[in-house]
Length: 272
Image (cartoon, rainbow, N blue to C red):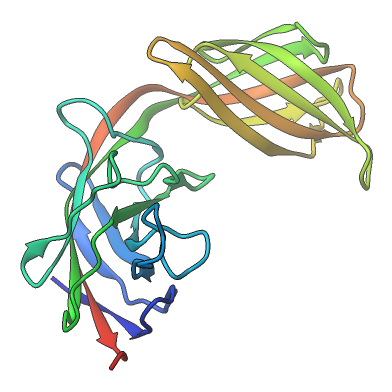
């Protein structure tokens, strides 16, 4: 196990610092790089009635940002439900740091890169290390869903609200078509569906002559509960097209990747 050293930790301040990586093999097909990429430590404010810290707008506690990267995988999502789910915990001086915030210590703000190569997961505890602690450990396993069996399909559709568009295995409906008023002419198009869009890795747009049109992702969202979920994904496409051809790249299947995490982050305490 390799250690990551952070700069001075100032009491009641948030520290974001430079880090050194540590490598760990995944439990399945490939090797992954796992490292800490951020640290936040906020001592509780005794005058706060709601568990706040001295740092305005921040709860008391500690949070470590953990990055896992694998050039041979395309990560789709963090598995945080079910019997085989991500389980990570923080400890200091050989004792687990308590998490009393009423929900999982794996942050809602987990992020996967656009190319699917890495994921960043916040791991937190409401209890901070006691004075004299020299390090904090992050241990457990990170469970990720990754795409496999890549496929490509082409589709043509009208750029119109309520137009049904089949993006690979997912049937969507265009819910918004809005022209952008900033810079060069562009159109924002939103696709909505009750099927997960995780399996779609990329979408390219072409004009009637087959020339690729400049486009970029413009956000995605999901909302609902259980089986009643709605997913959307938006793109900004150059110009004001009335119809488009698209090439959809998607995964025909998925696999589960288990990445063991065993990081030690050294704290240089500057408080007296």
